[in-house]
Length: 402
Ligand SMILES: [Zn+2]
Image 1: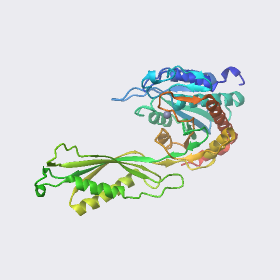
Image 2: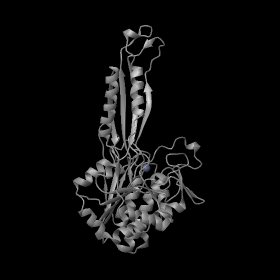
Image 3: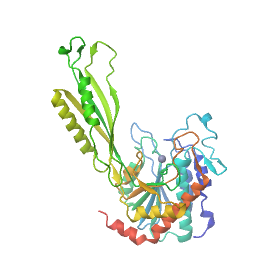
Image 4: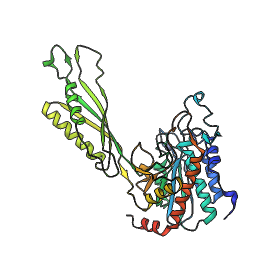
């Protein structure tokens, strides 16, 4: 298995992937390209297109080599966000240009660069060790930047139905704010959105006794919500945060007391809470205000995601140590930022995120340094090597899971 033709240059491969214009939901040739390369390495590939009424059909790829535990999975997406006006770019967003140590193009950072890096690392590992101890897989969706309906969630269901048990997962999202090695994401805050509606009685401003103005009721309710201290933060999380995002009355008239007033809030919350416990807290707070004012104020809520954290243990430590070995800095273990597909994977196995620098993601002139791509490939290679060197430990951790 030391055939050098199966080695992968991470920078050249990332550039090839960038040349596939895979703006969600278009496959753009990116999954075909990845499948071809992984199949050549010996991976068994499954294309998993999913569709449902009202959503675009999306293609996905699950590729695995090895049949035994432990099973290390790399999760990511080949779809990219739109380019915006291509004339605003210094280089064509799908040119895949490499110049003066910089890899340019849409997806360079988010996240074709990390897919190519992991593929290069896996290729090196397979060339050196074959597929003896355990399994490596790629769980790659074409629907991360879009509605995320026909992507990772459905693939995870598919894995479960086919007895494909992944034991540990690295998501290749750009986890570093400014420099490679700064940050591993080991969890995320949860998010819940609520609409607060105060119902009054419309009337003439000159006859307020004949009306019931909902605006002061809403203002009192929002003041009470804004005064809540949700928590002080926890070991791995910053304090939970409630933001009033909009207040709407839409009253054009100067002489009319409106009938309703509405506000929206968003809460980003840590592991002190659940979406349900926060909805209960807000409902209780609102009910007290409503009772004190004899007002009618209602709450509707939608939970976008619960918080989660992968407790630092041998897996997190392996990745942190690998980053330290290659890059020379100890990464911060963070739970900041927006959501990713890790929120779905966490129901199946321990998951963390480590990828490139995210400074230019979703922007014009998305780019990464060539050196970072090469170092990321080395970090992933070190992770893979360490993982299978301790295969029995990681497999045992799997056994211990409920
Ligand atoms: Zn991404």
